[in-house]
Image (cartoon, rainbow over the protein chains, first blue to last red):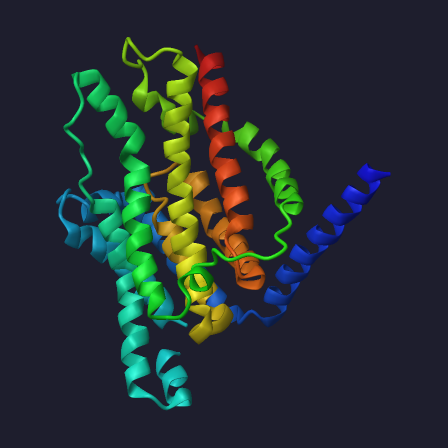
Length: 81
Length: 238
């Protein structure tokens, strides 16, 4: 009985998470999502095909390159919104 | 979007503050990544190497938490801004989500690039000779490694999603996912791509639940399962 009750609680909570996802997808601006996805896809391609991270971080130990890379990614993603 | 938001609120100072916070986010993360925490206080060289590997992530977590706590204090109550306050947190569905990840991690554990990266435990193997029992010192390393995921959850899902959502609403989730994906560039390609969607999922959950604990359970669980997968996969590889 306790197991059944526990499973029920898990199922209900899982349904809540699925509701969160549905709500987000319903309210999602498709253009923004596409732009962000394409943007990150380009960066992933550049990184794995042309070692983008290696080039950005080649001055290892300096704070600026480490700051610049995520700042570019983050702010561009924001301003594309 | 920000300009629209600020005009709506009608305050120039708020605009400056949001933009400042936007740029402070990658700066904080850069400080965490670029921090030098090498401790030269151990008796022998092998212990020095071991403890510096174990303490690498907890020290960074400590510094990041202090910085975030101060910054979050300017945005509201730090515990709430960073998603650390939770009432009636239900952990079972997150364990179910974690269970769903097991087949994927098992499949990844057969891939050469995954086995080259994991387990991270390889970094402290061989252990110092006096490290007995060995499992305890391996556990110390895994706990230290796990603390990195606390800092990631507090920063990405707490500060960037829950913290920024007071101005940006659910629009804070997508940029966080892009930023989060970019920190996986040194990892295997499959992990990097899935981190974008994983980041979105965890962002959505934390945005609605207003806490980071669900994400933490899933993320930490996946990280330790990957350690286990890498350990078993490398054992079979010989």
